[in-house]
Length: 140
Image 1 (spheres, rainbow, N blue to C red):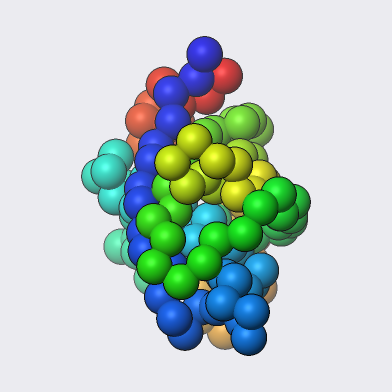
Image 2: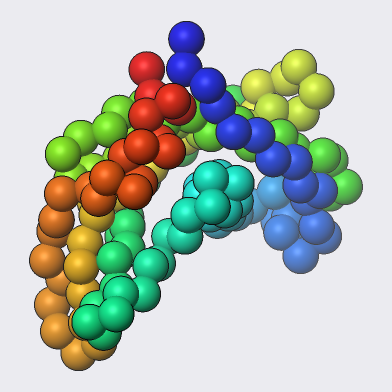
């Protein structure tokens, strides 16, 4: 089975709706925060500035989340991130949100490796070996 990366966070009051439940939009932010923390744990960055003035990054092309049970103010949510698929140019993650042993939500996030320069359009590229060598141990 593939390895995964986990992080925990406490639901802040400002992240809840009038019912005191974490607003659905925060789950997308938490997936992205977990992805960035995962990259940092591998000594990588999600936006790698190159010497030629370009940046290699991973913009999102798809994201979804299925909500199962509520997360409320001051709950400690664990976000478990797993690399579901490594494509030639793309990465797909699965995110499992839980509180203790209770499933809160399942999400997916798909990104595409791109090279870009400020003011120019994105060009998708093959994922560089620097990333592949560190990501492969986390794939299925």
